[in-house]
Image (cartoon, rainbow, N blue to C red; front, side, top):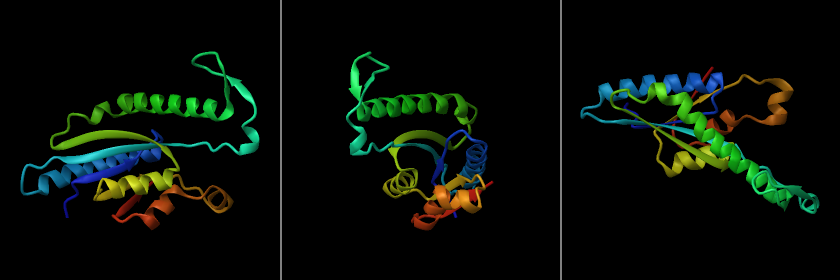
Length: 166
């Protein structure tokens, strides 16, 4: 089977770096095995966790890092989320340059804001991804119960195959 579009949820951690390395290898093999000289797309996706603000916390004012004006907690958190999104885009450029010149492999990156599991699944469905490759951290026991598992949720709900790597 040839994978033309591979999605790698990426956060620059060791597990996500391992997932990216696997995706590159699979993309190379898919490019070799395809009948035509096809470019395989590897898409790195980082989802910045949206921070919900309970209505009871909305009354306070905070000093904006950008303008120095007083703003609501909701706006303050939105500004921080947008700063994180900008920092992640820079991180992509710094960390993935070594993979840019691989023959028949196109590397793209995308940063979204929201719930990681939901955004990964929605993106994969919308973009008609052929394969998702995710790194896993190995949380177990109570930690896994409390925090849930993005990889588990994605593997259970994705419409395409999901490969989990350590």
